[in-house]
Length: 215
Image (cartoon, rainbow, N blue to C red; front, side, top):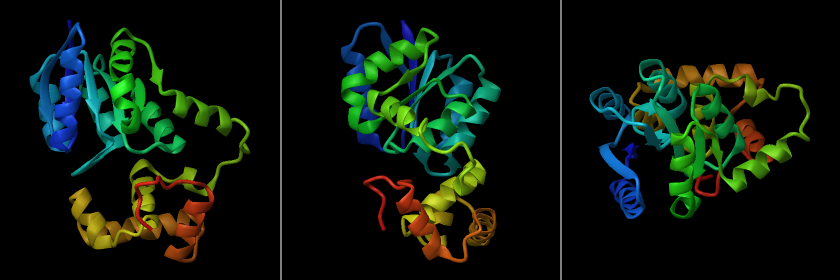
């Protein structure tokens, strides 16, 4: 029996994932969490084989959360389930310690396969994401400006490019507006951009925004 934890800030998503796994044989959902803080408490309190983790929850950057989880529970396998279909997010998630990456649009069809593969020690990437990885092999090897950013800076950069205000970003990340302003300054410096409008143009040009991101 594969023991599964689910971490997602949307109750309907958690209900759907639980229903899918319950309908398949060999899985038991042993706990759920709805934000970064409760996810850490969850993995500490429950013995499990796989954590199905939303990359965008309140309070913590998803990639940073993966790193902490792997430090505390190295044997726990992590399957990222996210609305972010961008290849850059997947790369950062795998580097942080994830074993699988699945987008929510394909979750119902692939979830059982993905959890099984990850639980058995393998690595799972959806077909759509695998195609993006293959396409990226044709890109220049030189480091692009956004690749110089830390995981948190990259997260803030995409939020700014998607049209969120500093106050909105601060609220979602549970930090002060001053902290977000500091991140913005670092991002502009590292990417050598003069202003926010340049960040938006850059994000669009390099297809770093998903369909659900607001502009």
